[in-house]
Length: 347
Image (cartoon, rainbow, N blue to C red; front, side):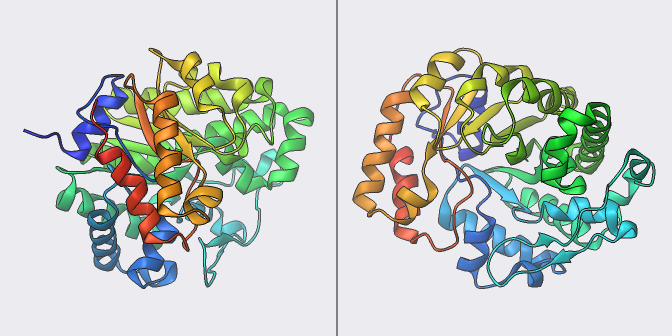
């Protein structure tokens, strides 16, 4: 009997060879919402419609992973910062923006309450939708809910530019803030994992090689990720990690995060990543979302996908995935071709 998409990618997480190449988008919220014909704002207060969108698009896209709440990550900051002036601005196209940063000093951390994460109506909508999507299609697909990584979430609260400076000027403040964010995210996922959610999906773009150096990542970004992944593993749950940008100079750090898999940006040499991570950690990559999936023909997309698999995917422990979340304007034919290559590639 053929393996389900869920079984296929879980086998890859275990560093084994499933029946075919595992394949997934990362997030995909902007594309799915546009394709379904709705908006982030409309879905934010409608659990049933969010569920129907996720289920409908999952069956159309055919990724092994279904990401509920993709694009809503900034609401986790708003949930704890509302009393300090944080709010959300919806956009015509794209994910909702955080309107302001609200942690300016260490004293402000004392004003934040972890329990507030469960009180924001949009956070509650996404969490409820996640469990309903899992109930509907969780036997077939691996269902997750998305979040920013602790380093990125902390930077969102403080302000990215200021946060980068503080890694040099106020490292103790940075460490306290990211540890708070790790605890916040664990609290966010705890009731979902208790109810059976099998995987956390973590995007940590501010930990990019384009923003911090390997020593900064090792000190500030790795420990809170390990805190989350250790907690998840204790609860028999997995963790998916994606970091944008060129992380080629710190690939050897990723096993230390304890995450089940790392999805690489298109800037990373995927063959080189394989040499470092083989037999250590599942990894995925790394079809360019714009240069390939948006701008090339289906035939060219097929060629690019096959080249990545040939370089890195033939020995198991690999997932075919775009180098980042995809633009909402990518033609469906290209997304279908991207998935078809993996779905038809037998080990």
